[in-house]
Length: 410
Image 1 (cartoon, one colour):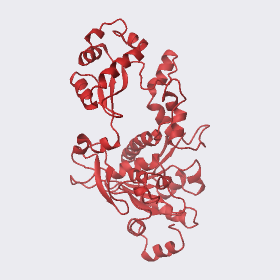
Image 2 (cartoon, one colour):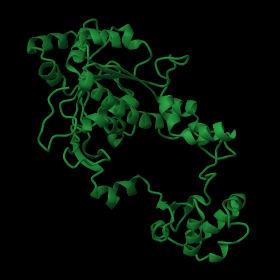
Image 3 (spheres, one colour):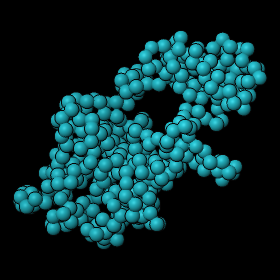
Image 4 (cartoon, one colour):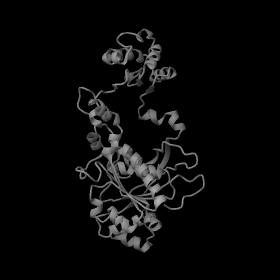
């Protein structure tokens, strides 16, 4: 890794160089986190095979265009974009230059693609012995499912998440967002940092194989422990929880307004009953124990709903929080963007995108006292070609123009 800046205004990862061959969700989200914290990340993409997120809604003003996708903008802040047509015979030599420049190469193509075009880990080591390579896939690069191809929701199904999501009397529910594409980057980023630390100590790079399937399993470990210890196969419970009652979202005053509540112990139950003015329920035979509350959960939820619907969701949350009862209002996107807590902490930053214009962008959810993040707008397709190829890779203008005219940078 290059020399890190020492001034207090430098972001934590300034000097780290990443060649990002990934696309769609899990790979780009990982490199976004690194870029937002100062790493120089070059997103290597192609105009002949667009990143699917460039083709995914929502689009600014409803106009479908590779540079107007909110999905892409959200997942690729602070990066540089360089286009490279990997099908062109001269492209692989250019790609190899990226390897010589980078500290980390990240990809999430189908199993065997990078090896097929001469950019597998063994090939990369010949170019740069201490390179760190990260491959992100659904099932990992080894095992009987190594050739499995899919997206984040495939991991939701394979890992058991879908089996646990939904209502008891209905089919499994695939979440509206691909959680695998959100969860996996957390592990990939940690893996990159661990490999960099290892290289700092030993001078050696390494290959990192990240499985979305396995990262998703990590997030529902209690369900697997329940089966291993008790033989119990957990299934869909809607908003309910086998170790808590009440546990759910309850209707409040107004249209489509809700407040979530969760009672995990008898002290919380006592305080909850006091808040809703039903102290007589504390020792009621039906409700005084968790077992009783679970057996009479329909009746209990009806009682709670009759109380919550008389108050705004903010009032319900405030009363519960003041009594020490876990609760939180259910916010929609508008309310999240306007939340004074999140705005005070600058979770959203307004950036001016060349095509979309000024728009909110999510910033890192952690604050560094000495190495603040510096979020930049997501790039337009090929926006930084000249800077990347001549400035970072050291091509002459003549070579750049020649390769450009030959279609290498499409």
